[in-house]
Amino acid sequence: MKPLETSKAREEKQKRKNVIIGVFISLLMLFSVVGYALLSGYNGEEQEGGVKYKDYVFQKTLDGWTTKVTINNNQITLTTLYLPKEVENITSQGSLLLSSFMDRTVYIVANNLSERQAAASLAINLDRVVFRMQGACPSEEQETDYCVDNNLPAKNCDDATQDTTIIILEEKETLQESSINYKNNCLVITGNGSDIIKAAEKSVFMIYGIID
Image (cartoon, rainbow, N blue to C red; front, top):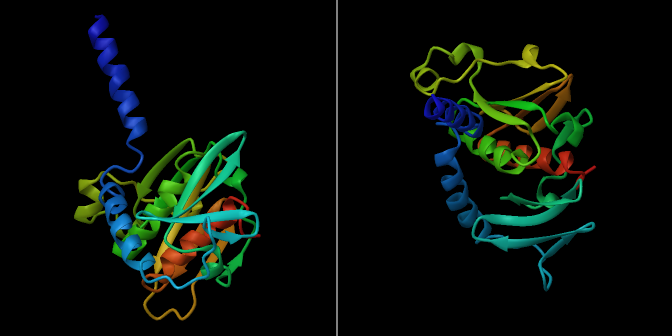
């Protein structure tokens, strides 16, 4: 009987750890490759020891720009493709606070490659502070092979609660400007192509208080 209980416990633990099964794992590798390609052409102002933005110092690595933040006496390393200076002009509405994500279940709704790249950036930077993170699909896509094969739930802003935060990524090809809109525990990020990644990373900077 004991081995059976151990197996069940191990299975449940594995389920909790697989917060981004089938959605973000391969994207994290892609994120690193794309990041290196983009960063190798960066012409921003670098100082000895890194690039400074307010009280934060960003270091260039093969994975992207990294900086450290301290949350509840724990140091967290953030990794992004872009620096705060490159995304600070993106339009945002609503107050994005760490408390809206801390110890909550977070669903990230992403439908195509650009949206999933942006989702990967959000995932690697929020994973340390959320209770659980799960990929999701928009309602109109829930019957597609991708959503069915990866057993992804359908989520929208109506599913947001005090314990559950919804992040919706929407790539719009005709959109001229990216935007961030947070309301009632639902964060909607829109952008065209790689601009949606910029908007997602501005959201990360806002959540951690790097950008007001």
